[in-house]
Amino acid sequence: MNPFDMRIIESMSTQISDIFVKEEEIVYDKEELDALKAATRIPLKWKNKVSESRIASFSLAYENGALYAADEEGKLTKYDAATGKEIWQVKTKNKFSAGVGIGEGLILVGTFKGEVLAYNDSGHMLWRAMVTSEILSPPQVQNNIVVVRTLDGRIFALDAIDGKRKWIYQGATPALTVRSTAGITLAHGAVFAGFPGGKLVAMSLFNGNVGWEVAVSQPRGVTELERMTDITSAPVVNNRFVCAVAYQGRVGCFAVNDGSQIWARESSSSAGLTMDNDYVYVTEDKGIIAAYDILTGAGMWKQSKLGSKKLTRPILMGQYLIIADDQGYVNILRNYDGALMARAATDGSNIKTMASALPDGFSVQTTEGGVYAFSTQF
Image (cartoon, rainbow, N blue to C red; front, side):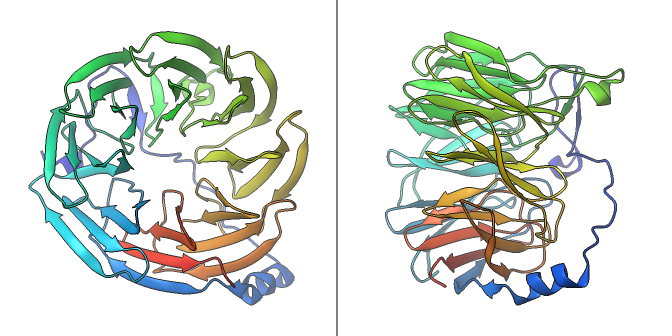
């Protein structure tokens, strides 16, 4: 069977491919529509094209003046980040399912068959490693260790030199879970990962030993669908806190050293969150961006008038939050009050993953394969 027509599931769990409850059509009054239409336009620096993505979600990756893009057809492309000019393209016989991860001289992608492929910045393959199932999020690398997460709930650590397996962690899997691109976060010599059932785990990067495990959210309700409270996005970490959010659950921050809870609030997100020194910013369901005080969890502001009910995880660039949506729009919000500062269209197709920061702007990849670079000078 073609990998594009199936989901590779090696556990007994059932995975639903995204939050499938149909939302009612979003309705705005004339004043709100006029505000969206009148928003300052974000300057487009350049655009290019890769193959469309029917199943997978890809993130662009920037390093040393270059931007890297992957697609389902198995192409890895390097662009000049300033001009959009293609520097090289590697065409493989693999069907990529995740990427691009970058760091320590490695360009990393994953496949539907559970392969991790490592390239250098010249496009030469350095090694190939096999894990147990489809890779859904970009592999991460730190301290000469590549960490990758698979569809069947496992986390693998691989040697960055040759791809040999160093350790493996098996997370618990409830009966019903959301198919997601939940990644992992590497910081402080640890791997932080959220799991189905609302669990947040910190484990050693070097040997996989669990340091602590906490419940961000507890399942509630009667049916399996009602009780589904998965963490479907990567946690965010600073020197004091690790914060995570669960679908149909809560957002919370915990002490990075021992997992003790600092605060938690009711929330629901399948997209994710980010934070700065003051706020935790969450892309909540139904098209809401919410800011919470990082020390207390107090609600600071909410923005719900961006024209879409399906927004990406936000990224921070100075005083701005960058959020994209399923209509192909990118939005810039002011971080301290959520006000819409600027907005731009791409090709009209879904932008599934968060924007990628550039030195003087940001980039996004659409499901139709559009690669766009925008400036934050407007």
